[in-house]
Length: 246
Image 1 (cartoon, rainbow, N blue to C red):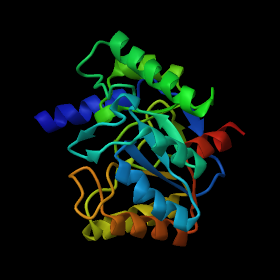
Image 2: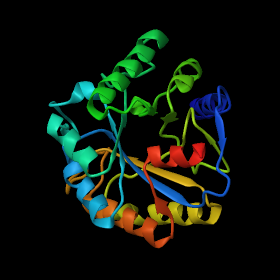
Image 3: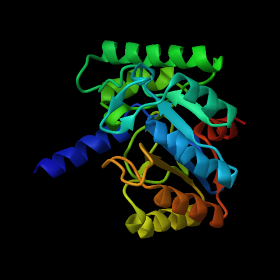
């Protein structure tokens, strides 16, 4: 019964307050995103992306800077300079990593705004505006309030984006654990190639013994290599949004 209610709730959220963009002929695209973000997402994950000549999107909760938690040490101020210098995207994950299910709509919306302002101070980019929901939690009311205020919103519901993309709740797939997950990742990449859509991966820390919400360097390396071999373009969320707006 609970599973059926969760499924029904997700369908209601997915089909309410949509902001649809047509994927059209943009072809197969894969995006790698990192949430929060732990330093290893850049020091290890960034090295892997750089070696492949591609970039990722880092959704930062700016209030977590210089802290440590179950994911390990979080990003430092100078990490943001390194991230931008290497061509990665710095995106918004609220300021305080707030759950929309544990705060009012007004409080959550304010935390989204506060996070975006903090990122603008670092990047100087008034058009940053790409956002991911902390914990992947979203409600109908929050989707309706936050969606129109940002350039795009990403969740953690699995799937491939296309032939239309709901910019108020883009689908994304976890990239967790080690190389034992390689077949699942390969299947997603091959399915995206077949559908010529937009496949988004998300993870947190990237280290030899990752948290339950992170992956090993070997897993990330496999995913990046598999995406490149498939012929997909590997783009940041900002790069995709620019293509969609063209």
